[in-house]
Image (cartoon, rainbow, N blue to C red; front, side, top):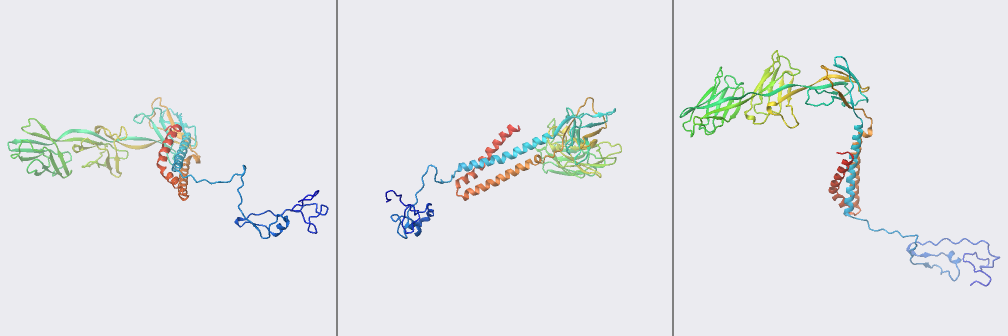
Length: 500
């Protein structure tokens, strides 16, 4: 208790010389520094050292060695909020959503990059009317295009209203690989496939007497003397007949057959097989055409005769030998012939009995000192072959019709014949682009998708490692719906942005 008129001594005041508090005049005017803060250290409690106990009033000072123990309460304040951690979310739906988002960007970004690159390439493409300054003959002319430098292999010239099947149409192309020439594609008729003699009699069957009949076999164009013919009649017993050979005059062969055991005047099976040995070895089956009166049983077995007409090619010369073969047919080799001094077209007859409705889609021509070449018919529409009787096989070649400097855009045309009256030439070409980003934009888009894929895999692994099994499973399950949803979204956005 403080005395009247005096303040109680602070426990932090310095003691007097005699150990008492002393009066105010004997005390220091400046208070002593407070002791060091009390430090709470774990569960061992709070220890108060001797110096601190000496500075505390006698009534408050604890006994020496006393340790303060107890719990430190939580500070409750409207400003300070204790941090609390809730459980991590582990949801399958969340995993599916993450995969769908990854899938969308993995498909969308490359598409946008490719669309942007395509627009950049389109910006480098130009269309213009080609103003040619022709000379009086109309064969030689010069021109100047508006944009340079021209990109390699991109220069094209065509007449306005050009059609591929119009013989008056003009089309020319710039050379590739740094070549400055302008060329034009041409073609000539190499082979025609036309109907020749039509139906040609191969064999006839006639009754001679009540128990005897005969087969007459007529030679075909390619057969030669001493070529042997053997007949097989599946309905006869025995089915095999004798073998005969043509003489030097190629006289038709007559086979006499005994029909005594036949139930009818005609063979029980009409089909006839001819086995040929010689220039055209092989087997051919025939079905006859019956001619009235049927009681006498007159049968005619015919070949259908077509012709391949081979015209001289660009490099063919007099006395050049040509061999024609049909790899698609059994009797593929049609023989060899030689051009005369007048380069008269060569005619290769062929019989098409075994073909049915199937026409020859490719032929092979072997020419002396030129090797083999394959030829295909001229299709009216791709995948739809022409009618057999209209098949024409062309030989394509190129002619030089001009030149152009790709850097300056200056060019020349020199034709073998003038263009038609009023023809307007159009030019389309691309200019050289140095846009590295546009050129490699598709690669950047693909790289971006690959990086996203790696990130997605890392996220899946981390979710399983962190115990988020549902989330990781959802990311795996989300592959299928993510792909479907992304594909639909990208398709819709592509229609909106690019119109494809």
